[in-house]
Image (cartoon, rainbow, N blue to C red; front, side):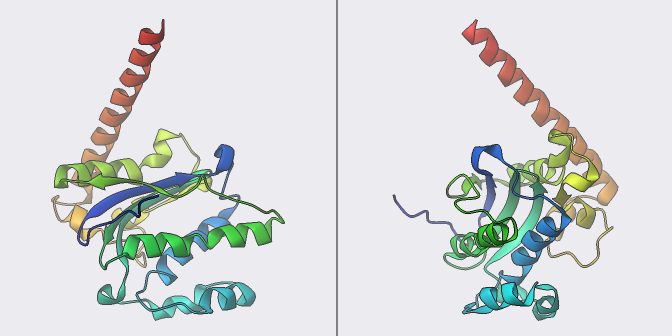
Length: 218
């Protein structure tokens, strides 16, 4: 299989779901572990035995004081949503091979789940999927879809984790680069209105496509 070449400075929608659509995040600690991995592993520095050491020590929390600077990161995280059986990320690649290396490191989450729940085998449906975001308009609408993805699936607030709280200013210690989106709006309220309208339009088009598919099969 040909190796994907992601471009530096380009944005991508990255996503994947659990094998057989099974849940990959079963409790709040699982969400926290994946998010901590997104922060701790986003560094150009080689990890060596860091991941194994973190597993043995029972967590990453104390390592979060070693946050990499922007110049030392593999990717820039624009937004994310972790749902029970799948995730969405919007990433900007900062260095060559950054996205591939970042996602490879996040793959260690499978080992964490397998150890915790006494299971074995693959956790996700193969290699992560991606879509190239080729315009600023696409980026803004994709951010709305990802930030509000819990509403697509009508999830309760305990069933997901997303970057929406960072955009809303409710979470001050987040790691997302929200300025690239929010700086294009007067304030969060304007972005919130845009995001809700965008999501409604996306869902309407998805429903129309579904209905057209049914009609074509009849």
